[in-house]
Length: 212
Ligand code: PRP
Image 1 (cartoon, rainbow, N blue to C red):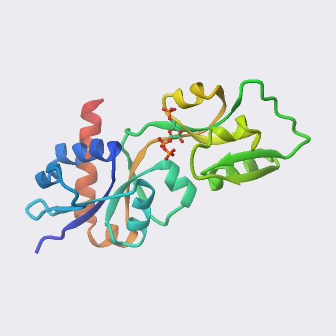
Image 2 (cartoon, rainbow, N blue to C red):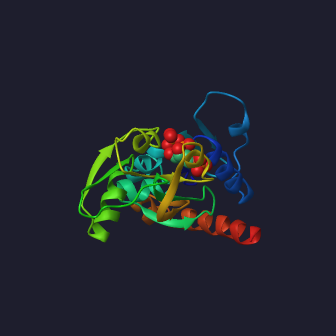
Image 3 (tube, helix red, strand yellow):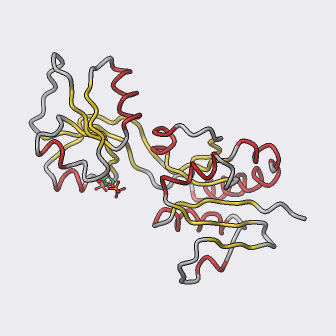
């Protein structure tokens, strides 16, 4: 029997874009387009089973082998450092991780910098590479409010169009790292289903090349 590849996709707009790439690459699963609340879809003939999961959970499914492959943002991979293979940059979900602050912010290096973020690991690694002392304030959302209310000096957050910063009178101080969606694989799956995974990866890489 053909090996079914379990594929974890990030639920939402990015996931739909990514599914379209899988579809173009020849791994379609028409039932996924039916409007329903179902989360798992399979196409036995093509040997694929897709499931929608919360974007930040994709790497957990893949790391633990509940999914053979998946698509996760580089932000999640850098933040949680899951033990998975990163196979391909899909060139979608492009944004950047940046430090932002109020327009009049001037860094006083004699003081510990107060940094509000959802991405504490990324922020810690970044400032430690600069040798800068920081005080991390972990928040779960609406990070942009922190410098406005004086909770922090700066934020480390995702910037895509820059609209959220602009509308809150903040600006980018520096870019930490560029971000995009990555195809990832479970390490054991990559060993035991290497043909299927390589084949899928190569077909998707071809789609990306063709798009230029
Ligand atoms: C991210 C980020 C910013 C926003 C930036 O939030 O935290 O708030 O996107 O995008 P922009 O530069 O295009 O305005 P996201 O929408 O991912 O939701 P979250 O608040 O749950 O992180």
